[in-house]
Image (cartoon, rainbow, N blue to C red):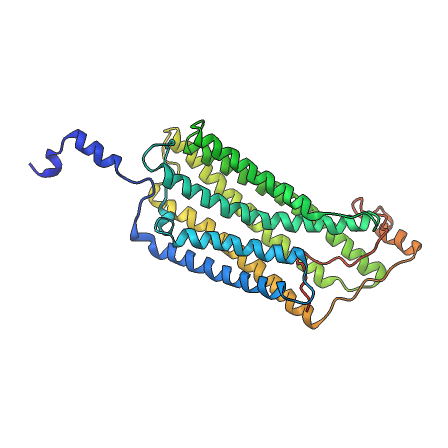
Length: 348
């Protein structure tokens, strides 16, 4: 009888209990290394663009925050995938643990790092939507009324972090286990994906309507800006839909696994789901960076043509485009101003 057969049940149970929650498997190291390197390149690119714009003669707060969020998102992902456990996290399969159980620290750190990156990523979309809404409100409200778009941005992002903090408190007080924490986080991501998608589609449509109105009434060429908004909307919508589908899929798997129904997604293929999610995120990060930087180079060569002030008759005409109604309730315009695209344009 060999050693494996002669081992007592107690010994086997002790051996199984020592298996870490995050399994280290070198089989998928190349996938994790690619993710770490690709995120690092995106981080350096965003940091470089942030530095250039921060030291430019005319810098805009929105552009600085935009680059900063992209840099922080890439940095968090890079640090996690480059860490001893994170570099193998594509093989991580969620397990049901409580505070004090074996492996609970690793499971908690993995989820916190994942959610931190997600919240920073979604902050980018929130910033774009808030900026669009701010530019539209400038057409509606009197110019003497001061608007504070970053207060709305900070409030929304603060609410998102507060919900995550509540989930962590519930986990630390042992009110929920790791499965409950994962369920809350995945649900939060799905809800923010849906809300961000709806807001982006609505404000994108309104922005394009306003720009078309300037093109028709003021004869100001806004074609490039309309295309920029359409492209930005497509990029963001592509990520929001794709990420929400992957998150919903993993949410179902977590529920099935933690309720002992069975593995909805095989553990050996879990790396494929996680890798797909992060590759999608990388594609969007690079697309936004390249699109923003490309528009920046174009704007350096060709400055935007300022939209002139209009008479009362022209403002009335502008607010009633196509002789049907005002532009989705936006108007009459008391302060005609330049409406940029989703980019927070950089100028030297």
